[in-house]
Image 1: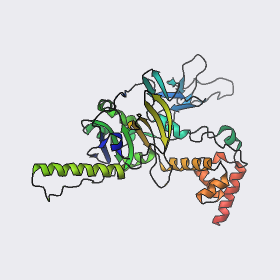
Image 2 (image 1 turned 45 degrees about the vertical axis):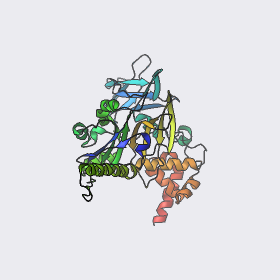
Image 3 (image 1 turned 90 degrees about the vertical axis):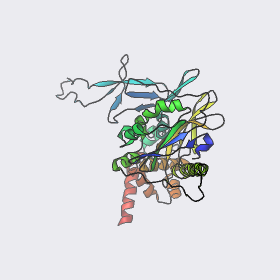
Image 4 (image 1 turned 60 degrees about the vertical axis):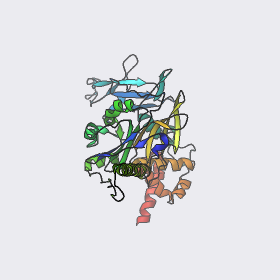
Length: 386
């Protein structure tokens, strides 16, 4: 990604163990836009996304979200109870509950000049909604559940920044540069996340919130391995340097070379224009979420961005998908591109129908196929092996 096209410069990287943070600097803040943080006292949030579907996010993920009866506050239950153990109708007390904060939309106006949205959840909801309705054509291979209910329910795992080893320490000890409006986070030199704000004061206020962001499985695992970040510094060639002016010019060239290498090589996988969807508009700015190409051979990032009328990024936050999430997204895109025709989708992948059916099963989509069809493809695959 060429950050300079959006008024950003890559600054000198700072390394703490396996964590590398590259600051993103602006010469001038983005005018007429500011970001603020709103804290909600309730730990669980449920969002009505507008089509009868409710997006629920909670930590830890083992909690089960439930709706209370009419007239009661909405809540999420946790813990386990056995009801009516003796068959006499007597029930154990209800399990403990915690309050749930309901919101009407993932991104909505709260005032004429104010837009409230849940950072990264807007992007994750876009990924979870990928062909959520299931097959558009009821081919005979698909189960009744697939045709009537689609991919409901759909869930994915993510990790808080607090769970990524070393990130909390790095954010606490690293210097915040003058003019810094963003940061690129690497763990063991794997691109983990990009965060951009319109104003340096916004970044200073939101810098600690990075430990509350969502990170993918690969980033979490790399943090556990604690593999040190590589040495990427390059010394200055002393030839031709005979004055402080020469030294200053050489340092300037080195900074530009580092920024070019970082933007094109290290952060090149970020592309917010691959497949973007507008979510809200506000006084010349557009909030969008984007999906990647779902290429299993490369990095894939989802995210959300606010762009101005000139197309430059004012706000950006990304999430790196795991290999499994990329495979699931790629399978759904392939099926949709071929009208959910199993044979056509399999041919596009260069495999047989049985191979695609087993890939669907391994990816957690086996329920989409009729049981007898899935059993037939399993037997077919076993015959090939023997």
